[in-house]
Image (tube, rainbow, N blue to C red):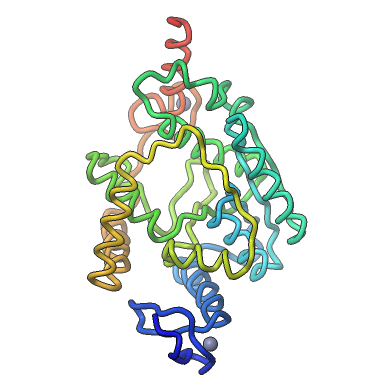
Length: 306
Ligand SMILES: [Zn+2]
Ligand SMILES: [Zn+2]
């Protein structure tokens, strides 16, 4: 990164170099480039239609706060709801809820908070002594996925946006590959996926934005975001995959985009995988009982044994 360089777009002093596009950018043009990448994803993959009622999953982290801001800025004609799920983790979620409340007030957006406890009978704190070998993140992820679908359905939304950036999506895909998680790989889509709640689509508008550039964007915009990390966070293999992908990108600028395109093509070739319905709750499931019911059942059994 050289400070003497001029912005490739406007000629003002540049502060950032995008190796994959060869562009030098000033602060203003950099911020604009993040808007462009987000809008490109939305248009190219038809994520949002005119009059769609939009739900945005908001955690209070840099990605979701930025997504909320960008969607509010460019989709003023759509109804937008920020959705926060409260996992019930003492001392963790409260800060985020305050940050989200602050942001939605500024943007004049509706905000809803739903609790895991009310939806599934357990908080993430509750499951710690009884989760046995299943990781906290696995259980939390299963609840989050269904929880967002439940909220979207209840509120009658058309589209649910989540703030996964390019790095998040690639990491998830590689982890599925390493774990041999074929079912998940077949239904995973970096752009738009069918939600388990019928008639609602799920989309990832930040799919083209590098994690590093997302951080830069948040910093330049001066957004407040969550500082407390989840006490149960178990990054496991994810941090290794993150480092590996970053090393690859450094050696081969643009390789992350190539990977993303491979996954999109694979997904298109595969079509949508379909399955049956859960005998228990009626939500979609591959093979009798859904992940949520299996998880809750296991927790109930473990609780009895304790
Ligand atoms: Zn510029
Ligand atoms: Zn079920």
